[in-house]
Amino acid sequence: MRPRIGVLGYAHETNALAAPISLQDGVRIDRQAGGLGANWVAGPAVDVLAESGAQVVELPLIELPPGGPLRHRDFVAYLSETEGALLEAGTLDALLVLGHGAGCTTKAADADGVYLELLRRTVGPDPSLTTVLDLHANVSEAMVRSVDAIVGYRTNPHVDVAERSREAAALALQTTQNVELEVAWCSLPLLLSQLGQLTTGAEPLGRVIDRSQTLVKGPVLNISVFGGFSLGDSPDAGLSVTVTAATSGEGRFPDSASAATEVADWAWQLRREYRSSATPLSDAVKRACHDKGPLLLADVADNPGGGAPGTSTALLGALLGAGASDVQLALQCDPRLVQDAFGSGLGAKITAVFNRGSTDPLAATLAAQATVTALRDGLYRPTTGVYAGATLRPGPTCTLDLGGVTVGVSSHPLQVSDPGLLTHVGLDPQAVRVLVVKSRGHFRAGFAHMFDESQIVEVDAPGLAPVDLSQLSPVKLRRPIYPIDVDLADLDPDLLTRFVRSARGGRRHR
Image (cartoon, one colour):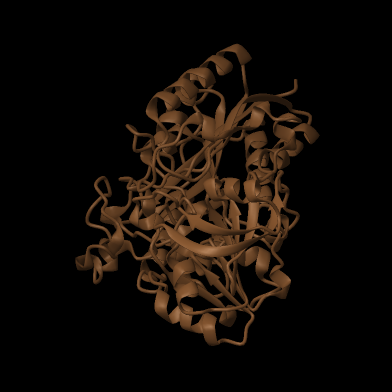
């Protein structure tokens, strides 16, 4: 008999510093043309399930943009809709949950845990739950206790999204063939900055993840290392490790717990090596003025991919003030300025006022004389980089020549992840000495052919996604935690187990 597998999800990365958002800010993947199979994340999993002969049951799946907490009443409404859809779907053999793992609402600090608990209560103890999580997930006990398998991205920039989606689908299929799974979990008092979670080159988190894969053998089917999302102000924020393993049906294998603690210990030993700072703004501007190029400046703290609005003018203003030339910057988010440019027309000379009327110090008003050099509209579908295959929505855009610095302006906040997006808005990234992108790290996958490591500068400018953890004012974050609490710096590794928590997810015996 064909197994019936429901595919659904709730994906949101919450920046506690940003303004709340609503369901209307997200995209209901299950309501898009082509359904889940046409989506860049869900599609690979649906293909695996369909090719196996399983019946795919499409259920509610929402993808919310990185940003502030979801309004709780909206979250409750989505939970209710999901519960109703599950009840209407009838008997299911498994659920494949496409999530993120760093969701919060205006009332719930662990929205993912609440969501997964609802799924478990609704379908009962028998159907397996396999979930896919982002590398920045803040994994909680509630999440682990609700599922049978966890699969996390292993790369940052996230270039393995489709691969992990397929892996999760394969695990879900195994559970329909009398394979029972369990999850062991370790959560460390170790808070990593977003730069500290890059996995490229010799970055320490990448070394930990690569080494963890040597333990995937025998009953151990998956090991995922999560850097966490430090901007979420969650009691579960921090580095964690999950190990998904097959059980004998008579109890758990010891391999999952021992593997989880071993990988966690490796991650803890490298705690002083994770990056937690960026290049000072003044130093970055000096390089932009004097380097021969090519040079890429990353405005990491104003990264829309981390929940920032893309409205900071700190770096733009510093470049203009220093007289920098042959510079392109993208994407500045300012729908009102885009509207002004469209109203003036292509080639018009205007006074461009960024953040007109703003009183937010992180979105300071800046005025400059400009020429409108491009006016564009429409969706953008990347063919390279992290979001290859996705549909991005910058909204109407314009390009403004400010004299020395040309700025791409969008109506919606959007992280720059590949050169094609810049071309889409009217810039020419191939013909510029200095390129400035509002991105934390995903640009690395799309621009690797254009810039080597010596030509990349991560800039410590103001923004809602700061690199320096001391700039955070957490309320819900567990304490003590390294590196905010320096008394943990010399913690005896033998005491690490006092911070280890584990829980069983496995399927219930029928």
